[in-house]
Image 1 (cartoon, helix red, strand yellow):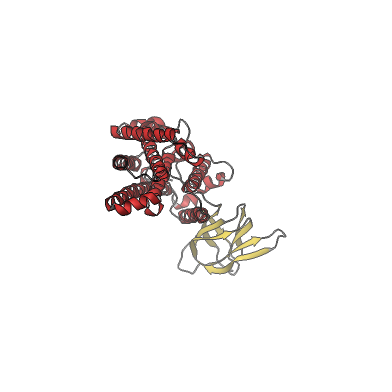
Image 2 (cartoon, rainbow, N blue to C red; image 1 turned 120 degrees about the horizontal axis):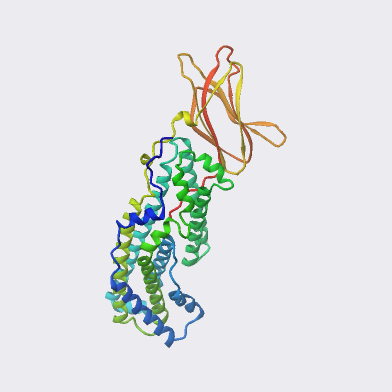
Amino acid sequence: MASTEGLVPITRAYLSSYYDKYPFTPLSDDVAAFSSQLRSVITDVSTNSPLSQAEKFVVNEVDYEPPHKIDENMWKNRENLEEIIYLLDRSHWPTALQQQAAEDPELATALDQLKDKFEKSLKTLQYFQTKNSDSVFNTVMSYMPQDFRGTLIRQQKERSEKNKQAEVDALVKSGCSIRDRYALLWKQQMDRRRQLAQLGSATGVYKTLVKYLVGVPQVLLDFIRQINDDEGPMEEQRQRYGPPLYSLTKMVLTIRVFLFLLWARIGDNKLTTDQLTILEQAANIYACEFERFITFMGEVFANSPFFISASEVGASESRNDYYKEISIAAGKTHEVVLSVDSVNSYIAWDFSLEQSKMKMDVGFSVEYTDSSGQNILILPYRRCESDQGNFCTVMAGSYKLIWDNSYSTFFKKALYYKVDCIPPVVEPAQQ
C-alpha cells in the first residue's frame, strides 16, 4: 500500500478548525416566534378542553427536548413530516372539515397546497439522507483493494438493505403506526452504527473483518472507532450545527401537534381563517428554513475532511503485497484449508498461473469436509489458467481449495493466488 504520509488525523480539534470556514447563518427569528405561538395555542386547548389519554400522549411530546444526535433529529423530522402529511391527506380530514371544504373550494386548495409543501420538505430530507449515506459508503469503499472483495461488500450491503426493507414492509403490512415504523427505522440505524463501531474497534468476529479490509488506513479505522464518542469528532458537529436543527425539530413537532389538536377538536366548529393563516405561515417558515439548513449541511458533509478520497492516501495495495506465490511441482497438488464460522459467509479467490508460450493450466476445485471427515465436492473440478474474482456462499465448516498439477509429469506451475474467508459484512452507516 502506498504511504499515508501527510494524511491529517481526523480529530475534533481538526474539525473545529475546518468548521470555522462554514458558519451557519442563524435561523430566522420567525422560527422561534411561530413555534412559541403554536405552543401557546396548544396550551390553551389543553387547558380549556380535557384531553383524552391518546391526546395527552401526543401533546406531551411538545415538552420533550430534541435528541442530541444530528441523524436522530433528521429521522424525527421525517417522522413528524409524515404525520403532518397523513393528517393533511383528504381521506384523513375530520368529517366536519370535509363538509366545510366541500362548501369552500379555496379552503380545500389551501390544505392541498400545505400538504404539497410538506411533501417537498420530506423528499428533500430523504434525498439528503440517501446521498449522505451513499457518500460515506463510497468513501470507505474507495480504500478497499479493487478486487472481488469490493464486489462482495457491495453485494452484501445490497442484501442487508433489502432485508431491512423487508422488515419494515412486514411491519407496515401488519398495520403499524407511523411512530412504530420510525422506531424500527431508527433501531436499524443504530444497529448500523454499532456494527461500524465494532469494525473500528476490531473486536470478536471483526478481527477477521479488519484483516479482510487490509488496505484501510489506520487513520480511517481510528475515526470509525471514535466517531460517535461523547467527546469525539462528531460532537463538534453537534455543537456547531445542532442548535438550529433542534429548533427545526421542535418546530415541525409543534406544527404536527397543533394540526392534530385542530382535527381532534374541529367537531361542530369550522377551521377559522386565523387558524389556517398561522398554519400556512408556520409551514412556509419551516419549509424555507429547513431546506436552507439541509442544503448547507449537504455542502458541509460533502467537503468534510473525513470524506477523504482514496487518491489522497495512496493507491490500493500492489499485487505482490497480498498475493501469495507457490510453485506446484509436477504430479502434486496445493491446498488451502479454511475454517468458516458464520452462516452466509463467502469463500473467495483470485488466482493465475505464470504465463509462458506453453499452455500452463491446472485443475481447480473446492471441497467441504463434514464432521465425519468425508470430503464433499462443492465446486466441480475444472482445468484453467486463471480464475479472477470468483466466490461461493458457504455454511459453517471446514473447506479446502485445491490446485491440482497431478496430470503434468514435466512442468511445475508458478501459481499466484489470494483466498479469503469472508463473514457476513456490515455496511458503513450514515452518521
